[in-house]
Image (cartoon, rainbow, N blue to C red; front, side, top):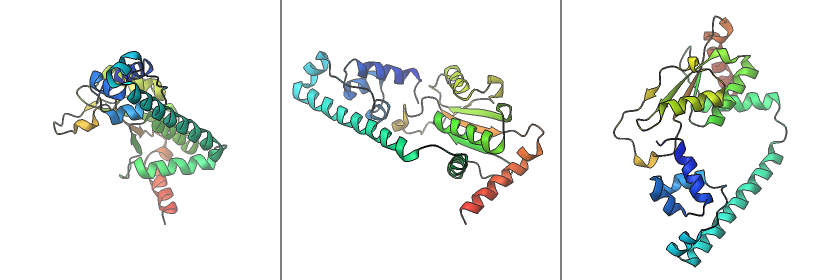
Length: 221
């Protein structure tokens, strides 16, 4: 895990024309993480990079970077046409698929766990539109690592989700010493555990858990 600001540093260095190798050494993050973070950041090698790795290698890296960027932009364009307008039923089935993969299957508990802010936002939207929940019906717990900036991460998730800090449960810190170093930098904001609270509404308590289970049973028969 790294601080969220690490990605910003990586982005700035890439915009300034530095290679993945240089950035990886500078901020101590794997090249695979950089490849994911910086795929859509335009790259033009600066003179320092050219002098260090040679003109030919620098040019080759620039060409490959541009080819990758062009492919990403083309894929996004095609994807918009593929998806079209998202209907309520589309959202229902999409959210249900998300819950099948990332949701709690325990009795009496409705929860989705994910590290991707967009996935958590999709889950919130799904719960609101399908189960008629409001922000007050959510609590959230963030799972982090010792080198995460707790306050920075909590503020990030509060801003992203629109949930108040009072809705955040006690942050859990993973203190395991056997975590793989290859995971470093891949979850800069930790993992969010989004839980539904009934707040006295019977249809959002045990019944909602059973309702979701029944939906899953119907589509997986």
